Length: 288
Image (cartoon, one colour):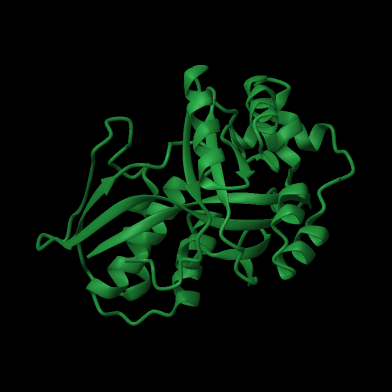
């Protein structure tokens, strides 16, 4: 079985507050983009879990969410099974694009087909929530409002096709560190998630780009000034709006068209940043 594991971006990301269990509730509108990894899953007759990757910096043991996905799947299915998973990476690692979570979600979808277990998408989301906050969203992807710790998902009207550039200028900060900074210096949220929902319902591309926002961006920019520089380059070169995705450090900007986005991507690369063009997609019927 071969599955595409699509990256996601956060159009909005609000941290609503800290829970009694130590986790944080969020309110975020997530969107699938065309950038993807490829996950190939085969049965293993020895019932082992074997992970292979074309990138040497990807762990192939229990630290990998794909390994956790296999363990959780076989436990939920009540079967003794094994799998050989090959990961072909295109999504940057630890960049706020949910690459690891999407790989794990693709693995769950593939195992469900391979072993003919018949789990619904809701069941796969419940399995994924055990080991990764972004995994439930990545099971189905598309345009969605994610609440709670990311496990309460409301599908939204699909975004109109929008061209974007994603760029990275260096290492990010750990997500736990940013939550700690948020807890130490709580400020009133200025993220317009409700306005974003209205713009999406109207298929208003400019309105969507104007309402991009991320609670973590301010925190991350205190230590990672390249985020401000990348945003500035994007805006000065035609971006309708730009914002950091997830817990960073990737930044994305929406553009009028593919040509303008491609020009900005080349400019960012010429200045020493990692950058690439992609577009938003509605992934229904595009998962494999």
